[in-house]
Length: 103
Length: 484
Image (cartoon, rainbow over all chains, first blue to last red; front, side):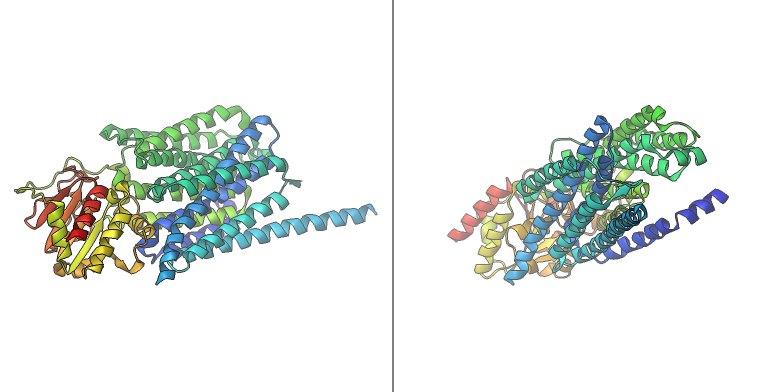
């Protein structure tokens, strides 16, 4: 029990962030028209590419060749997620924009 | 003098650190604003760009200012090389792929993120901080974040790749009831591994790397088997689910590095993705467990009814019928996407409008392979935004529709969803094409839809079938109407 309390106390900021982020995520997504489900999923997909930061950190401190190689792959994968995700989303949304302009 | 240098160094250190933290705050805020803007049609595109800017800030700040135990980021040349390589590949793939292939592309990029998260865990496991292990043994937050990141990341990677393969038509469904039990067993084993590793007490993590590799292998297998039995119609739900998984995996990395940008970004996507998944399930009237555990009930075929006879029609008849209607609705489905017939559909609708026919598109929320799939597709071929009407709105006035043209859709117009409680589709909102005065079904053959359920609409008295490839049949229709 004491460990749990201690864990809670030492990690209170993170626990705060997590709980607030969960609610924020729910709040932000609610009331989305079905039209935007696909671009929204794609945009969210790009945002979790933030994992690339972790990949950069690992690679930035890689000491052995094997971690260098794995780190390199991780950074490439992360970049693919970020760049691909944002570009695809932009391509989808570009078509919506064209529409509203014509009106 | 020495003291002065020291002070200077401390200032430089804290300055960099603060800039880094400020950048992460800015990045997090931009993610949130971006997501928010993405949920409105007018602001969506800018929202996407804002989120991308946030990501750029976070990445640049990390490279420049991140320090671990006072050590700045090294290997910068290689890191930048990797980023350039990833950018080039990602950009080219994203620009080259056809609009119809968007769903599998989202799945592919999602898998990349999952893969990155899994790799991070593998590399960090041997470096779990000694202090923590000495104090708490393996039972600490770092180990948990790493193992969860590994598990979720690999499942997301393998699952997304299978989903990609399925949507791309490279992988077929495998549905055996045994798979369900295998999957549950694998999941139990994975959790067991985590519990076991964490119970090992004070141990050098490097010595149990083999356990991590075994776990990786099991998680990959689980990811594959998890998506394998899920039917194509449920694929959007699965991709959305895997999307939120990757979000969680990214957040695990955030816990590990105590990195706020990763935590907010990851958790935000995790929770938003979960909600999106649930919304999609609701649109199809299916529960999430149903999607994940039970493949569409192929056994329950519903109450057998007198089916009647199929009435085939010709393009000439169909053209006349359409041209002399007042109100026509087009109900597109995945078949339209497969046949790449969206431009012709628009041409047909323009032609009819010129001849004084009112044409609208009825968009079912889950028509196609992703929610909004049809909107994207039709938007691509310049169909005005306001002609795309959601199915509920169409249904209100469906009795006044002279002809409903169903192009490559099946389950979303199946009346069994309304009147046959035994049908697995029962309760799903549909476009009530059966209530229109006439219905023309354009279809390649008598095959069943993804749900593999008989569609009584095809046998109804006012339904005419027009068999053939959607693209060539639409072209024929257009030619016929032009000649009228």
